[in-house]
Length: 299
Image (cartoon, rainbow, N blue to C red; front, side, top):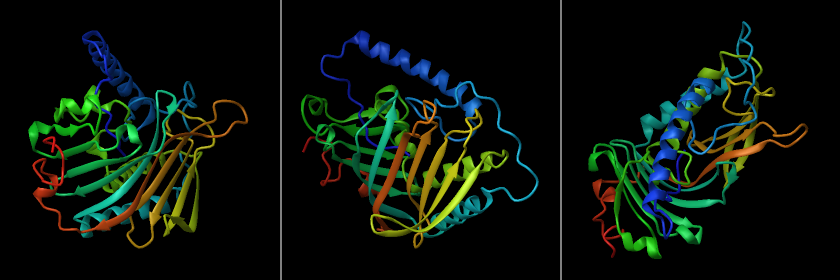
């Protein structure tokens, strides 16, 4: 649930501007804690959670009997267990689009390598052109918990490789989630967490759509709708596409409640994992900034 790393200040950024950015990040962290208290489990996105349920009341408690979310939760749990048992690593192209501070960004395309143990990420930005060529490496337990990153071109590239806290202000600029939350396993975990939380309440509609396609892959689409704005819920409508063969979520999209009566749901975030290739046998070299195929040293 993470993506493009826009972690360099714009040209001409001043010391005062950087300090203001840091203070803003502290304030946002405080608001995020408050939002977490209101919206349940999982990660509170940086740059804006749902707004259509602001000031809304609590959802009604679930009634006795099977909750509509139960089959979806079972599917998500089965997929997560299969992923953990059968997939050691994978490569893919991730396409993401996120709303940050009320503004919906353009589609971003990122090549990913992910290894599960230890959790390791290499990403290379493919598009758009203004951030093309950016690279990021993160490995749990290395580099004092920081990620290594560099810009692709222009003045920012002259800075070279920098070491940043994954959830720090610069790393989070232009991102809803940190690089530590990227990938299909993290997505599957969050889906399970949110489903377990939401099944405490009623006011939930769930539908399954078989034979949906994502980039030519046959998937089962699970659509969850909370029709009435409630402070307990993180979204109005969400769709998850589970690859029928791989049993992993390959697309997720979430919408806020309409901002006006009779309006359309408002897209908050969407992530698609395409061309997934599992068990490539990645080694430490795939997540090493000294790898000759990468450009962390300005090659």
